[in-house]
Amino acid sequence: VSLVWIISVLASLSFTTFVENSGGIVAIAQIGEKFSVSTVGLIYYGLIVSYVLALTNILPIYPLDGGRTMKLLGEKFFPRFWIVCEKVGIGFFLFLVVFALWGDARRLLALF
Image 1 (cartoon, one colour):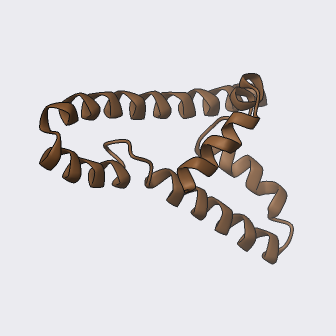
Image 2 (cartoon, one colour):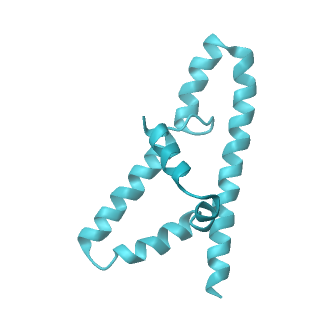
């Protein structure tokens, strides 16, 4: 259910909007500055970040927890197919890491 929600949110964004708003730790910190004016806002933002990280972690990409669960099922029922899925998942995970780091680097360079 959460994967469908994430896909629907991402599908509603244009590619340029998605790229402009992408990032990792630096993006989270910059957005968090807006919520740091009050304790309630900061707690609310912390809850949102925690929820998004939990949803990301259950995605069926191998290095994440959802991928590890899929690995247990995949190795049992589809061992040959799972070998391919595992390699694709690791590649996709590395792409997401590089994409987030690129967004952070772009944000940091914009400060100068």
